Length: 333
Length: 255
Image 1 (cartoon, chains in turn red, orange):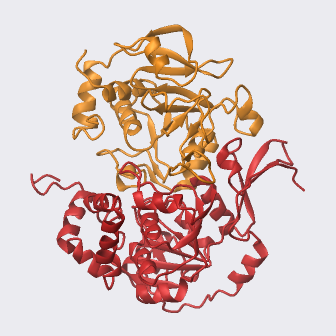
Image 2 (cartoon, helix red, strand yellow; image 1 turned 120 degrees about the vertical axis):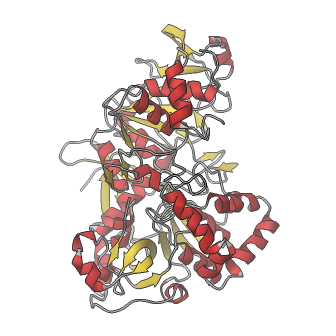
Image 3 (tube, helix red, strand yellow; image 1 turned 90 degrees about the horizontal axis):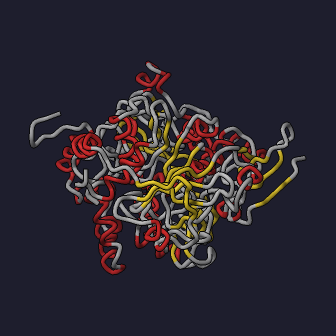
């Protein structure tokens, strides 16, 4: 038995029991069956009130925007949320008051762009119960879950108030006697990750940084994939080295071209900074923000309609040029 | 040289602290500009690392996000957060750059809340990767404005560990030995930390300011290095690189 040196006082929103998780994953279907469905079907089927939600990517980079919007349209409520590397995704979900419990590593901010006035109001409203972590702490929790064990040790956070308000514990290493922090495993009920390519079964490829998505995919009880494009299973099998998420982790595959918009999609299109700035600006006035949400999210049928409102393919073409550092005005690139 | 602004001065000073062959974990903004300047001016083998997974990119422009595609443009590896944080934990990252709403005399940083945590007056983003960097890099660097509301006796929440409550506290808590805050670079001065007491001390004062000016804008008693000097100004070469190559659109240096 480890000697516990210190304990955080924060709430634990999910049970870190490894055997219960094994039992769940034991029951998960390993058959190679098609899982293609619409975003609205995937959210209706796999996102449920009260459950624990996580979103892949890094805030406004390779995010499943369509899933976040649809969660608002379907008025999901009382969820717990992994506020891990979350920026624009958090902004959307806070706008819908989707969650009332939040594991916090990074929330409210959109990095150098500024803070979301609405997300801040929501977090200061007293409607959300929270627990403090760090980005690596949350990645460790997912890594533990992905490894099928109930905790992961690390060497950060100790001695800080972040630790005091977490649900982590500090123990003595049985080998060396040094202190280590233990992070409890986190098995989210449902997660959504946006990728470059997937086949109909859910075998996925992504390009560029993986952030914590490989751990998240393996930790999640249910996983919704949105993909820039569907590819054939032959294509996947022609280069198995490129597969980073195997199909048996996946429950739904939704083809959503430009699906990370207004976020960046590596090697495809850059983030739409003007649109993100518009969010930050209209949020300052709650009434104006309500009208904005009605127009862009609640009033749209699906992601394609939202994209049209934001300038459609013409805007995407500009963001493509930016991603590839092509200067179409001066003819350089 | 006298024709430069405060941001250009702070970035140049930060860049000089990054020696060739070192590794540095950065965010966006001034720290990223400092790392890019160091690479171009004197440290071509400086390894730049971003928390979301970008390792040693050839940055074509200033990134907007620490996870955007610029952070792994022509990189040696596009990895993930665990890879980066474990590289820090192994002791292979020399420097990290951090910011925050408050910093105290021991270099502890608050980026979580002002006021009571339960009912915060102001809620900020939280740790993000800051605690991870500040816990596991060898040396913490901070670039921030000198302001007595920012430089406080005790931060209201320790998001990221400095020297906690003094000598030996990091090690006692369980953090790696010989790590901690290194330099705090402001618009008025460069501060370091007294090797014995681990308290913040002024090491160089920028031209046009006195120690008293710095003390007046610090909410605790600032120690004075026995070797207090005037901060060397940016060189013509540093300014040229900064303006023409690092930040031609003046995203950072125009602030």
